[in-house]
Length: 265
Image (cartoon, rainbow, N blue to C red):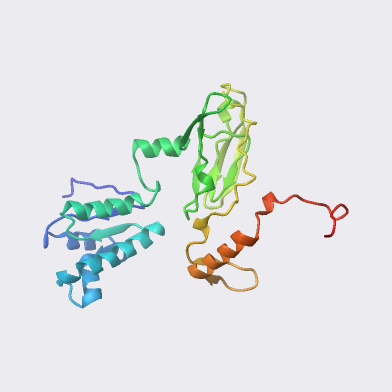
């Protein structure tokens, strides 16, 4: 076995496949942390006190996939230790992996999406395809540094950093120092290539901090200056969101009236 080497990304979902007593659990125990391995036998034992009780398999796998989803949400390598020899069982694992968006995945479609963004089917005045700004909806814990959307300055938005400042177009060469999150730039010596779209045409992000339902349909942990963190449960957040949606407006939409010209009702 020494001549075979399996390389895995730091964050991924691993499915063990093999018949009962084929050595899957021994392999997982040897190469993975105990916390990384989610065993179907363990969850059967949890719900019925008997790891061999096949009548509780549905309940056991409900718990297993719930735990796996939580680990993946926190970007932790996860190993599913089950037989997975049936096609339907493997489909469940694949569906779980696909639910984790584009983090940790690799394919031509993922590469195109990450490099250029999703197309809307329209074209701008320069003849370039109009693409959706995925960073507006990004709420992941992982910091994402990306490029291929050149601008004069670095764009920081929703824990994403667009560090493409158009060096080849006469702008700047920029680096992001991590984990300090320090931005370092040097000016280009010259314009090496004329861009189709001028660098000065930056993306409008005035509405970029708009809240979405996804920000509230979960338990929230809010850090405060004077008190420890405050937990807001999902049902309370939903109730507050309903009130806000009925009786409030985004400050971006309000017209500012200076005190001298504002009239009292």
